[in-house]
Length: 255
Image 1 (tube, one colour):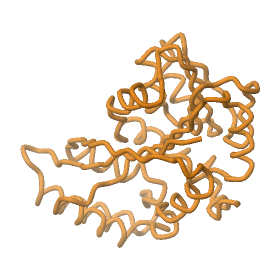
Image 2: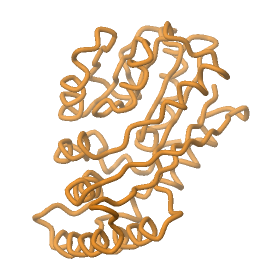
Image 3: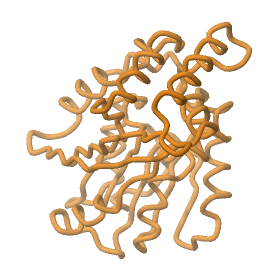
Image 4: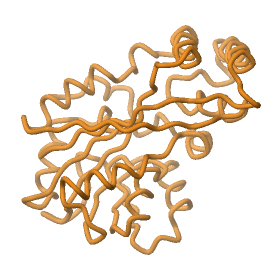
């Protein structure tokens, strides 16, 4: 199965959004570690391949736990941001490679993780590559921070973005994600969901929307109306100068 979104060249989509991505994208809740520890044998001695590691948000979670982590990232700008962000961690190794060809040795990792990245992979060769680098009792954990619609602000935000964002419907990854998961992981795949939230001031909210690959940048005619609508939403829903951005962190894990 080939991912139909590959023609959008995911290795380049975020090159001009790295600064906003680093500053305003959410991290991942520590409950992920507790869950993997109790149910799947994660320890601080586990070796992790974080594939499509981007600026290192998920990578950092495992480094803080004490794991050795390979950050596999094909986008040069994102990878350089991660190297700056995580440069003080001695157990971090940055790798310029893609999911389909990680360059890691055979049977070298205990867990393969992907945060906000799996829907960009070419599924068939990635499955072959993951089988090659994963140890026999290893696991794959595919993780997303998904916007949670259960607040008036989040509902209004989704409507606004859908109105003005470029290719929003094309690049809204839910259907590709579900098709890929059903094909990629075994029937024993398990799903876990964790609460996650971020409070943004106006600059943070603006940076959050512009960190998305489908958000129009200042040279696009849709940028100004999107920013005007975002300003209205912020003024309507802010509490003490901030708005609550709700997420559900969803993790799909299997072999």
